[in-house]
Amino acid sequence: MPRKRGSRGSTARSQQIEAGLVSLDRSRGPLFREKEDEGKSFRPDGQRDPVRCQRSENKMRISDLEAIDIARAFSEKPHLRGKGDEVLQRVGRSLSYIGDTHKPQRFDCPLLEEGKCMVHRIAKPIECLAELPDGGFSSDGHRSLERRDQLNNELYGNRWEFKAIPLMLARYMMDREGPASGKSGSTLRKEQNRVEQRRASRSNDPRKGSGPAR
Image (cartoon, rainbow, N blue to C red; front, side, top):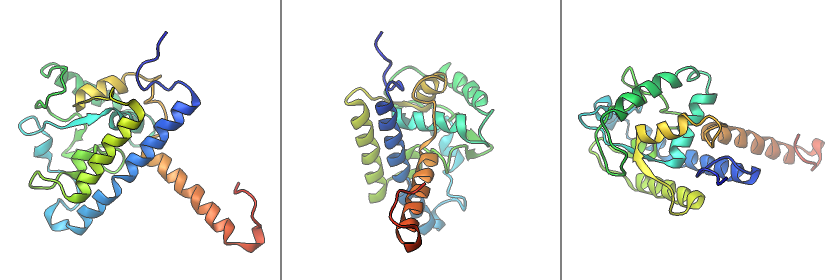
């Protein structure tokens, strides 16, 4: 039986997806710094104006890799556990009036809760994070968007999709045995950073020799 696109499959494939999620999370770094440097142009918490996330204005689309990252965040982040069903209920409401198409279409973002993005510091879609208050993108924003596309191309070739958030979340959050099962990019990157720090500390400590870090 052929595997679904992006299924966990072999260990090698799982590692490819994890590497992609780590790189995706790294691409958010310059965008968060941009918001901090240009604080007067953004909300104090760096969040997007919630009006932009509502049906009257929102047409945000995401890629396969971004949807996987979000789905993983809801399965493994302590403060999001148990909230996945609420998100899927909102997804269901959106699916009642949007079509299964790649074209932009208006909808209420299911990730908006009490005026804030539930995955803002964890797995926020790149375009949501990159968008400036005037609707444009900085050079850092364009680079992060290009990196997102490159990562999806590396994983899926020309078979990756770019659709409205509810469509992509329905695909991955409801597939508990697929690629959305595992750690999110932010968690994987933090773990990777800790390993690298231990290795660096060990290499700089003459008392511990040059053996592998444990």
